[in-house]
Image (cartoon, rainbow, N blue to C red; front, side, top):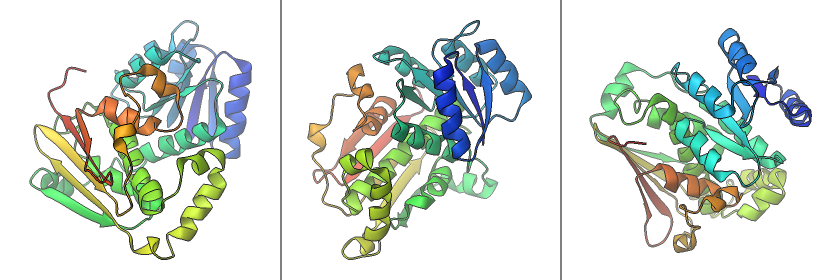
Length: 295
């Protein structure tokens, strides 16, 4: 991917450049917002990592400028510690994610993976579009976490075209569905802990690959249901694991919880969706987004 880093802090730019180049990506640099906007307009940029504070044109202003062109490119805001208000502002303006400085390498890798996934799968056929509006669809998949991005692209491809979401909100919907489905695979069907994922991601994914091929995990399936209408989009994700104590979730209305690594995905889901609820067992989540929404 061609990635644009907009930050006046040399240490941040050096860290991100080293990380991205090692991952096989090309990097463009900007030390102020106006320069970043010029590069974005000139080059085929596929992802933007932008500091909240920039000379000439601030991060939020740059985000507004880019989204005003109906750009579908993922935008990640780099926020200082304890600035959850602007992190939420960035998400509301169309950023697909945010990172808190000092940047955690694991969080950076997960965000980079999300940026890559959002650049895949936005091309869809008229045939699929016509049928998605006419019926509820049910998909059954195994624990193939490498194929999640393709499934999500299919499940969300018509939302902006029929007014359920604005174009810039589609990035967040893809991101949050990915969170829900990966949670169901990793923590539901494969019974892997969030702590392992945080402390040792290499071991986490290696263990996931091993467990999905052995009993009792290999026979567990994921059921995905979605109902698209002119008024709403409803998504249901159900795994065959033991479930979890959803009543113990952190308060999504508390901005301090956005700084936590564990559970942040579910908090972002609850902040974006109009309705979120689980079954009693805790192995099925239902998420609803309505068309008529002011924010």
